[in-house]
Length: 183
Image 1 (cartoon, rainbow, N blue to C red):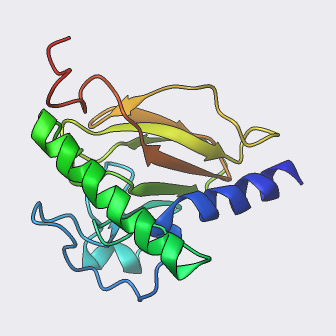
Image 2 (tube, rainbow, N blue to C red):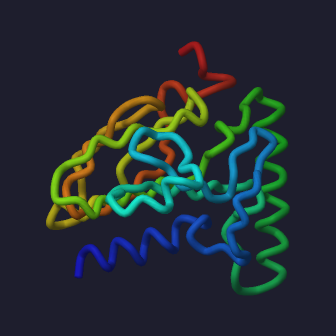
Image 3 (cartoon, helix red, strand yellow):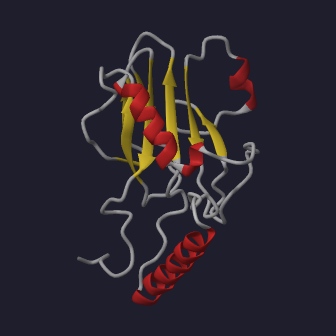
């Protein structure tokens, strides 16, 4: 029950899980990050011949977030208008103060699936060296919570046998830019 509750919260909090359109495998940002990427355990995108291998038991899917994926504001249209205006004002203020947008994949999610009975080391893809990933859910643990650890591009996530792990982008020392970058 706790895991199902956590999954419901995860879907509500992460716009990338509530898309209005199908995935197309096309870039959603200038950086070239695609809306969906299928990954090998070595952290590279799966090519055509891998899909036909019967012995493959582990894969990852990266769901790339775009700027347009912001949660909708529900309720009174007048309140929604003021919320959008306030958000616009805050963005301008942050830009004026020297804050920059987070890396291209901010808000993206990485879903790792292991159907094999043994643990498989899954390499975090090298999309942006500033990205830091944090486990959000790991079904190997009874309550779905993996101890808090941060992973950077090239690090290895030990994906336990017959489990699913979900990692999200997390703010970290390498992803901070702008005003506090040298602090």
